[in-house]
Image 1 (cartoon, one colour):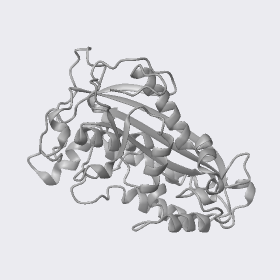
Image 2 (cartoon, rainbow, N blue to C red):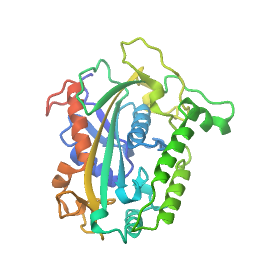
Image 3 (cartoon, rainbow, N blue to C red):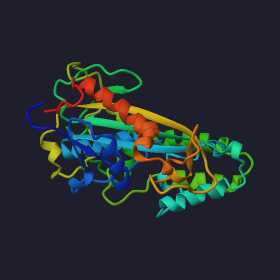
Image 4 (tube, one colour):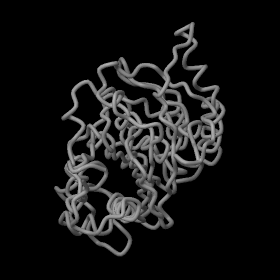
Length: 338
């Protein structure tokens, strides 16, 4: 892997999340840097129906663009009485211009009349590590972390003749419309109950699903990454497709150095708890002030960072990921990766 210390780029643009990731990754034998160090890195359209799919999309584009290892995470909050809402829409739950405060406010409004015994919720985080220059890295990885190889999607790029038809073309490789239709059906089918405004919750869920494709100008749309799966660098198998969305700037430093195959490691972590009736605590971010983990009287926002990381969904996912990294790269704790 050479003598120079490898970099790990944190794909998130959320400064609070970057800070938390850096705290948890402090012992990693790589140089951990934020995506902000790479001006021009494109936004990624997060249109997967799972947190693992969205984390993979972000890590894949970040790794391909920078030519460095990328780590991305995605988090969902599922509230039992709301049939899993806000789920993958946790960050944009309250709509355009959503903030931490507006998301929490909307959640508490929906749960206003739900009794304490029925306010169960679950946080889940998926963390994806993608190395676009893995070399011969092939150490074993233990469950529950997953390891897989992807063909470099940008080894060859293509554009459709009709730009207006491009989303339909990429969706057709693994039909996103069908996947989203199934997701919407499952979300809406059981969105009934008591203690909250069911009609409002249904309307909100429908609006979130319909607005799933929103992204800034120039955002890269990535099809389901499974279309680039391979058995590994030495397998000799052929990719199902050797084309990818071409909106990856020719100035992207990774295009000149990325290898034929990318290594992906993925881990998830979960935290069970309940939603408090009002925000408590000044630490953390997002829904932390209203989430009380099972067995705790304090919210996540009341816990010191080290205590939160020890039990949090993101902390659990990253610890599993780091164990896999050390075995996959043949590293020992505290040894720098060259």
